[in-house]
Length: 183
Ligand SMILES: C[S@@+](CC[C@H](N)C(=O)[O-])C[C@H]1O[C@@H](n2cnc3c(N)ncnc32)[C@H](O)[C@@H]1O
Image 1: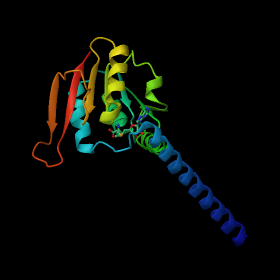
Image 2: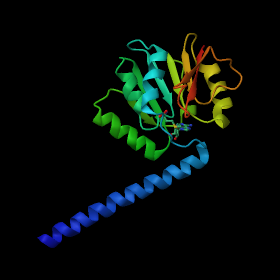
Image 3: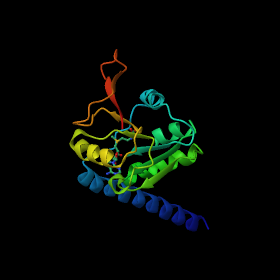
């Protein structure tokens, strides 16, 4: 009986370790293609960014590359319909777990956001990298409805002049900017 329990426990640990290794390796392969690593926005900046969007209940908010889902959980609290797309298995698993633990109505899809039409968005958030921003700008200009708001964290849209630029935590050495746009 003791040995059976021991073997079952060892098998479970080995299975979980295997899932972990597969998820991490799949995330590394994904990174090779997207070229955008999972780096979460510091929590203290999440509130400032969401407040800047001034979302109304029922409006659709997309986080393009939602990482661990922190923006989705915070945005859903405003009553907005918070939806995220994430292509890294590791970050996606974290987002699913965090949303579940927070009992949040936010939704996250394991999906490449370039393959989704964003026409119903009232607000978009993206924290990506400068090398992908030209493609993102083209997509947003093609699909967004008039009045839709966009916030880019750290990396602006390359040819679209921002309506407003906010320096976050200016007194801090690690300060960064957000760029606000309106369609
Ligand atoms: C810098 S992290 C930002 C995460 C989160 N938005 C935040 O601010 O905390 C960028 C995320 O975008 C994801 N990503 C990059 N390209 C993507 C794509 N084409 N489709 C879906 N997710 C993507 C990456 O896997 C990564 O987790």
